[in-house]
Image (cartoon, rainbow, N blue to C red; front, side, top):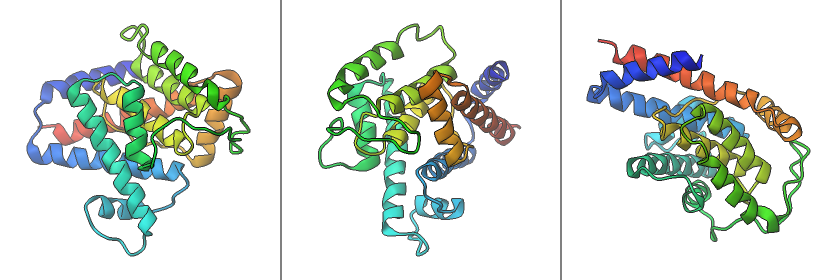
Amino acid sequence: MYREIKKKKLILNNRKPYRKEVARFIHELNTIDLIHSSIRLDGNNLSRNNVERIVKGEFVIEASVIDHAVISNYSDTIKLLYDMNEMDVYLNEKYLFKIYSALTKPDIVEYRKSNPVLRMIGYNPPHFKEIEEQMEILFNWLYKDLYLINPIEKAAYLHNKLIEIYPFETASEAVARMAAQYLLISKGYPPILWNISEQEYFDAISLYIKTEDVQPIYDVLERGIYNKLEIMMQLTAE
């Protein structure tokens, strides 16, 4: 499938610039898909229609104030990812903190100072005093052989490694998804719909923690990119 993805990406690049109305529609589609599928993995069952209404600025009475704030934070984060890509920045500690800050709006932006038990995957992350060292190793790995590895595989490993380290008090899973998405955006791939259930998601992470098998998350990313490129091919066809 990766070979087909590269072909579709090349065709789409040759069709640019897209018509303004098409580009706007694709941007809205990508944003809503990413937010809706991400909040589902956070345990939020808000409908896609309500997510779309909130993204477009409507106050939805069926949604809580917290729901509105969460979606606003995700929208801010996606805008940040695009801004980072425009500046052609590498994902490093500074920008990971920016992603975390956009997602959670914390009072203090720092690595966690506690040692949580992740019951959903039966896992104890590294001691908080080890986080800085492990994050330094992660960022060094991230840009090693950068152009020699399938970027979808790289993004899948980045996602899983971030959850393995679990650097933040809250939302480390969401940060991991946004970091993986940024790596893909920086390689010219669109935001995706995470087409996986919450239980399947945590099962995939648990499998990685136990065996370092990244395939389930890789499959989600690869299929998500393929499906989104297929839609974009149809929308941009003359």
